[in-house]
Amino acid sequence: MHKVSGIGGFFFRAKDPEALDRWYFENLGIDPVPMTEGAKSWRQEAGETAFTSMEGTVDQFGVPEANWAINFRVSDLDGIVEQLRANGNEVLVDPTTYSMGRFASLADPEGNPIQLWQPEDAQSS
Image 1: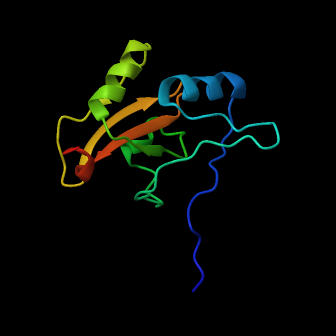
Image 2: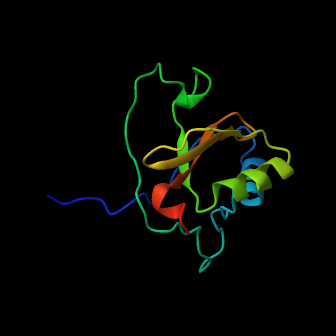
């Protein structure tokens, strides 16, 4: 069976795409898609990616109207939470450490749910 090798893009609607792209860059370091030839897009580090559909009743999506949620891997959850809070973002850190790692939740300026995940193997580094 042929398989895809990864996610090549994540596209979603926004009320103010330029402002939202700027927020993702300034808060999470995600480079906007370049509009000039030869410029490179944001590159993620290799690692696990969960790709799953979920019941409409799970609270991971924040508001009931949300149809998607994104989870970003991070190597230093405490550090990025501190950075996000210093930029005025409200971040909820899950106090439980799970077998797969630690988590925090926030929303972007348009209310889209974001989960941050520090995998268990990143906690010792």
